[in-house]
Image (cartoon, rainbow, N blue to C red):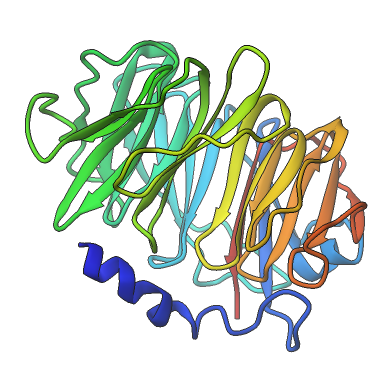
Length: 328
């Protein structure tokens, strides 16, 4: 699997040819979900500070959303179900809501979140203490993960190895992975963090095959980075519950109380007096950050050490999740 990871950057270079402040601009929509709706904005409009959506879906009870570029599908999480929408008909001017695939959940997933794997979708319902895996393609083959031994507050993701989709976990003391339905099975791995903290996010970098997490200790916030050796835990200098925004080619950003661009270059902590509730690094190399009802935009290529946003758009609502959707 690691040999495939090494090939991914070359396979994806064509997909990411139009990035950042380069021309031509990549046509795309930014999906913003929260407050019972999903609004779709032209990425180029947001980069100019305009916040008029080209489409709005009514989605009462929406908890999270995620987009699969490989399948062209937008996944929405609700307390009782997951829905998957085809995006092939999306343009810069419209986001038609086609009839979705739908899969019921056997637990209350209020406060839950989604994580994409290679072929599977992870649904974590922390309030219920349960997690489920479904096929990305058709939402079928639902499987409940065995969370035995994982304390409440653990963060989960999927970690592909060969043909397997392993369950990755970040607890207050360790980072590890194991088969979803067999906690004592193999392959598995676990490493101590060397500190005690409250985890707030865990994500997979599918190109480098690494796990990236974030959390807060007694006096500091930390990034957790694991690439097969001992995990590193550099301090972030941010406040509150830190989350991660990752595009595997364009960059990695931590955000919460302030933000910090970590890749392609380290910006150091920025905007420490602002609190950000959602973030996205797009395939266009722009960083999109939600601050209440405002969305700030930063060009990570033209200005990797930003002191102020390139543009700020008034959204008219406060989304809690963002997704970048390339369109034709």
